Length: 277
Image (tube, rainbow, N blue to C red; front, side, top):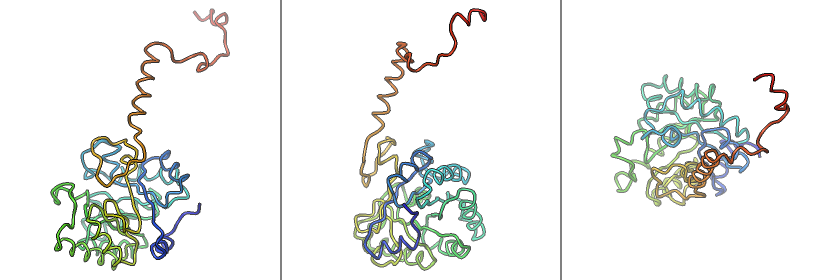
């Protein structure tokens, strides 16, 4: 499979061919996604919750992101990789935004960056794009500013809020984003925004009419048990299977049924070892 490009994603929107994206944070997961021919991988700052055990994404750092992007790029050489810009890394100025986006691309090796926010981020997005770095936008429920939103709630539920989200989407498109993630918004609003934009929309809890979908790997396979959002379809429930295996391993070790002879190495006899006692 040849790695897809921004131009190809735009063609897919025009042709009505859906875009499939999932998150990955390490080499083996990325390698599986590469084999599965997932269209793109998002190395999201969601890793700060699903992998590193925190209650939000706010404290995620650039070092965290670069550390996780690098093995994903190695594991999925044929897959388009999107790197999240963490909270606080692009808020201060256009210069800061360009510097951080450049670091993600150079040190992490991702193909583009993603950042959250609407009209207040348009100038910074334009500056990053003008610097030669592709940007994916993110509107609706924006986890980095969840405290301002009053929690993990559906956004754009009334006509005033819907109008703001549509205006923001158009402003981000004008600023130069190649796509926009729409998170936790009503399905009909997701449809409206998708139809109004010329760039692809990627839904996560935004309904069936977006140009593509993205899900968090650990949600999809039951590996993050604290909370499963309504919009997640689970394609497996691996946590109980892994737990069962770990319990069997512990039992084998305690009862001395592991390791068996087939798990050991030979090469020297007890007779030869007598001189060492």
